[in-house]
Length: 220
Image 1 (cartoon, rainbow, N blue to C red):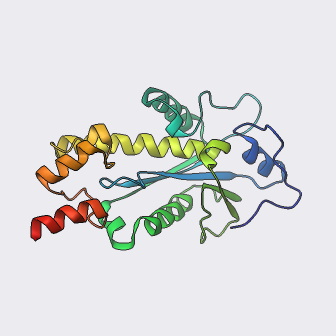
Image 2 (image 1 turned 180 degrees about the horizontal axis):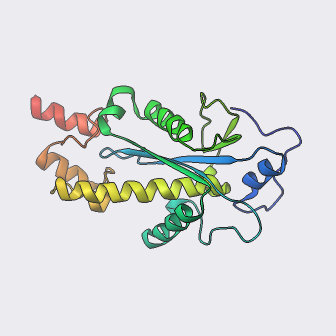
């Protein structure tokens, strides 16, 4: 983790754009935010987005917030605005078998590095939600609840969530019976019942405890 420079102070009550503006004011632009969707799901891909937003008066995105605080309709609107206005944007999709091979945290870190590397312009500073990401070649900071205090991280969270939800709806059509379009691969009671009834498919993360328990029961 590379902390903010000593003279950098996020002003009290700066709003969602505070971190991004502070870094830009210090000459650490472009600032990229990165976040993921689907880390806690037991089925479907992990999706990571990296976003560089334009800053300045009148360039804020209406309704921008942590994706978890927005309705599905609001997320769609905000994701559209992010895609229209972002100076740079990259998305990485990690399939379930890759998550199973190295674990979700390792897959998450690698996907963030890949997303940041795919940006057309190398960022000068990186903000991520919760934990810092080493190996990007640029300074960065993991911010607690970053998707609620950094505009670029919030934008990345929205793009990642909307992208993943669309993928899960596609998987629902090709893998009927699991309810992927409804629960998006998370371990809801309905999903658990479908797992027990149909068994895991290739879109399930077989290394996850609830999925492996069903597999063991099937083979035992």
